[in-house]
Image 1 (spheres, one colour):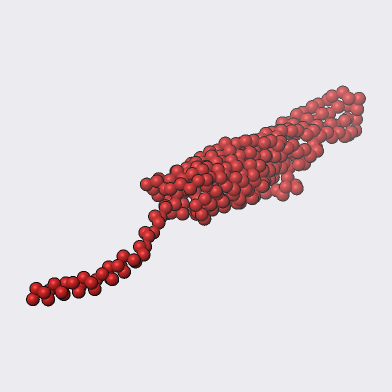
Image 2 (tube, rainbow, N blue to C red):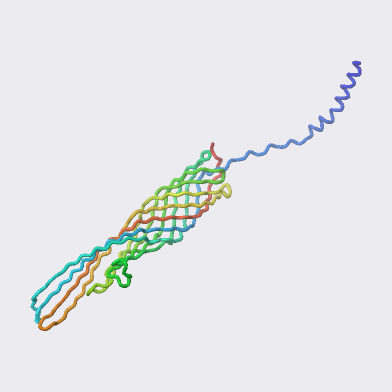
Length: 302
């Protein structure tokens, strides 16, 4: 019995040896490489283009003082009687100028990502073709061609720059963010006003043109998507408020009339002097797309 048991164990050992050897020859499959999480951290530069809907809410206060002097004299020029009438008239009006146009420029910034959250700072400079204007006619409701006074305001936004903070949430290669900070813009304005047709005085129009660099604020939001580890594309909306500014055209016209009636000479002199105060408040709504290149290939921090 013992001999039979020993023989059986030996046979089992011999039979198993080829299987053990065959198993040792099997190839070992390497584990998959670790997935490196995407990170938005790093410096970046880029370019953008878009469209802007600018608004210049304009108020005009115009004061016209008409001084009419009538003199009766003899044919030899000796005064007999004289009278002067001073008539001040104040007109006020408000309107909105649409200062729309294309814009494009460059941006640069830095992102810092911790977990899913992102903080950063970005600056940009835009060159724009935004321009537009509005006109005023007095008395109200009278066509400009027949108005006794007329005013106009024309605007052009030459360039716009912003310096903003950014805060957002990431989903791997997608970023949603809010942004806000300082805005600075250069606005060229032309304010015109004058007397279109006085009773005696000829037409007069005075234009005051100036460039003003205004500082204000900007706020908005956007979405950015990474195309590769370095390239990303974004869509962004910004609201800009550059505050108020104004202009002060002033001028005057003089007209004369004289007639001989019998032995007397009648002379009338009319002087129209006007002072106009323009005040505008400039805002802008911008929608733009951009392309960014981020330097480096950092790993997200957790």
